[in-house]
Length: 374
Image (cartoon, rainbow, N blue to C red; front, side):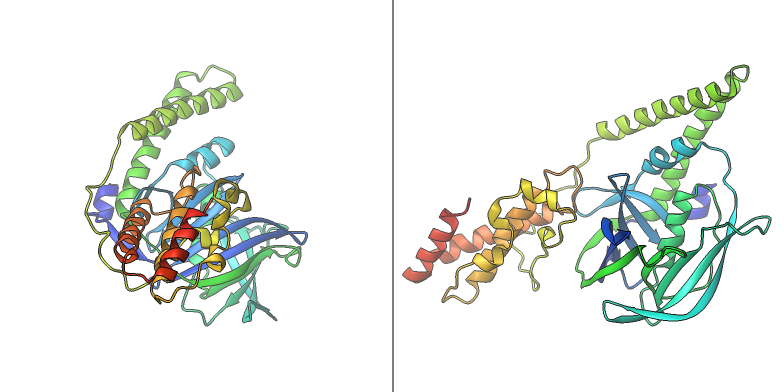
C-alpha cells in the first residue's frame, strides 16, 4: 500500500539557503542547542540533542522523518525514533490531540526582528484542555521561511501516534516555550546565517522503507505478546519489548554489514566560484575543540599577508579544510568527507604549482607558516 501511495521514488539534491541556530534556555541558563537548515522550498534538516544524543529530522511536504547522516552529503531514513520513543512509552495508541491558537496583543524583538506572540493549547479528542501544556511562540509573520511544519513534526515524534491538525499559522518561529515559564524556559533563535549546504535525499523511499521496517517490528511484538498471553501483563510487555529490541539490533547489524560507497568521480581540480564552507566555523559543542590542532581556532587571524593576493585565500581554505577533517573523528559530525578531501587536494595542487612562481618573501612566509603548524 505504501508503495502505491508514494509511487516512484527519486533521490534529489536539496539546497539550503539559511542556517538557523536555536539555544535552549532553562532558568536563564543555556542548555542544549537546535540547528535547522532551511531551503526556499520549505524543506528543513533539523539537528536536536535528545538525551545527550544527536537526533536528525528531515521535514518537507510529506512530513517529518528521523534520518541519519551518510557520506557525501547524503542522508537516509533511520529507525532511531523507535529506540528513543517506542521502548519508553510502549506501542499502544496515543491519545489524539488538536491544537488551538490564539494571537496575543504583545510583541517582542529577537535578533532585531520583531515578532508577534501566539498561544497554542492542546485539546484531547473529547475536547478536554490539557492543563499547563500551553505553548507560547513569538513569530516573524513576514518571513518567507515557515517552520511550523518542523514544530508539528517534532511534536508528532515526541507524542507517538498523535495526530496534530494543522493550525494555520505561517512564519518563522523566533522563540518558543511553555506559556507559564516562557521568559525563563524557551528555545530562542541566536543566529541566522546564509547557507550553501546541501544534501541528497529520497524522502519517499525513506518513508516507505521506514514504515515497512516498523510494521515488521510491530509484528514481532504482537506475535510475542500473543504467544505469552498467560503470563503476567507487565512481563508480557517487557518480554515483547525485548524481542523488538533484538529484532532492531539484527536490523541495525544488517545495515552495518551492507557496506556502500559511491563510485568515485574526479572533481577536485574544478575551480569553485565561492569559498568552501567550513564545519569548524560553527562547532556545536566546545568539547570538540580538544580533538583539533590548536591552530584551528581562529586560524584566519594567524594567516600571513602575502604580496600574491590569491595566496592567502587558498592557504586559508587548505588549513580550514584540514581542520574540518579532524572533526570526522567524532561519532557524529556534519563534514562532507569527499567534498572536504577534494578541497584539500585542489589546494595542495594550487600551493605546489604556485610555490616556485612566488617571490622570495612570499615563499619564505609560506614555508615558515606551514612548518610551524602544530
